[in-house]
Amino acid sequence: MPPSTPPPPATSVPDIRIPAGLLPADGRFGSGPSKVRTEAVAALAAEAPRLLGTSHRQAPVRGLVGRVRAGLRQLWDLPEGHQVVLGNGGSTVFWDVAAASLIAERSQHLVFGEFGAKFADAAGSAPHLEAPVRVEADPGATPPHPVPPMPGEEVDVYALTHNETSTGVCAPISRPPWANHGELVVVDATSGAGVLGWEPGDVDAYYFAPQKVFAAEGGLWVAVLSPAALARAEELRGAGDQRGAGGRWVPASLDLARAAEESRSDQTLNTPAVSTLFLFVHQLEWVLANGGSEFAAGRSRRSAGVLYGWAEASPYARPFVSDAGARSPVVGTVDLDQSVPAATVCAVLRANGVLDTEPYRKLGRNQLRIGMFPAVDPEDVEALTACVDHVVGRL
Ligand SMILES: *Cc1c(COP(=O)(O)O)cnc(C)c1O
Image (cartoon, rainbow, N blue to C red; front, side, top):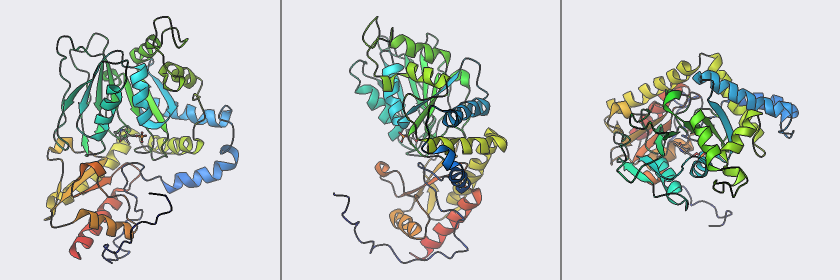
């Protein structure tokens, strides 16, 4: 469809006005991109003349990269040999980075939603890799655990997902006890990093993008790498002359060892979005100034308590994830009775300025999906539940 085609008329959206007193102070509940704090945008506008449109090789922008690296090191109390590395392209590009620079021959993927499946597909389409092993669970069910590989199907990467954004299922992260022959644990933490707990000793690559918990714009990937992951990236590209000395061809944009070199001097391989870096630093330092991980996790847990508590008490709603321990504190999924059309509820909310409560498209459920990242005020989640009750009562 050409971009000039107008959307179909929204005649099917009932004209329900939510009273101003019920509305949340901020109506953004997206699961990524997610709410960017207004204070951060104001700070960006104030700094803009000295920052936006200036060289990323000079001190002001390199200083932002340095603050991201130092701030994350502080947030997670990273051990000495771990390195924070940044590159362009978001988590989706990091899947290709991992296929080029982390997986030697074969990976095992825990697949319990769309994002885990996408990484497995990326590894499966790489011509230099063996077919990946998928360990699957149904969307919304308790997530699967890694399994010991079959003889002849040894794997050198275990690919885990910390928070499956498509379903609102979160999973504990640990190193498989049998994986003590140099296998890497690679974790997609895109929507969980900064709220969910993890131990650096259990993970070799913990990667994410800043448009979820870190309340910035998209476009970057960030990875916390263990010494073993850094060594694997060096080893796979061989001598670094791109074709030889036993190494595989690794394009510069997917070369994790190269990105690590750039990051050591607070740079990226090519030009990053400066506003993304700025907003990321602003959120990270806001979290650190207020108490760090406990503060961030506390806000999301409070929001999640409100949302799931409301759903459990509601006559027409229930949490989609029945295993309470697997319910995400950052992305809440709530099924509605078939008699209550979620698409209409979301459309009415949207018409009233309450945005992005729609479920993940491909899941195809009669559902609301609510982003409850630390930037979202728990009181606004409370207001949102009152708005849904108001709308449903008038359908
Ligand atoms: C959002 C998301 C991604 C994709 O991130 P991009 O930066 O848009 O590529 C991947 N994995 C998970 C778990 C996500 O939530």
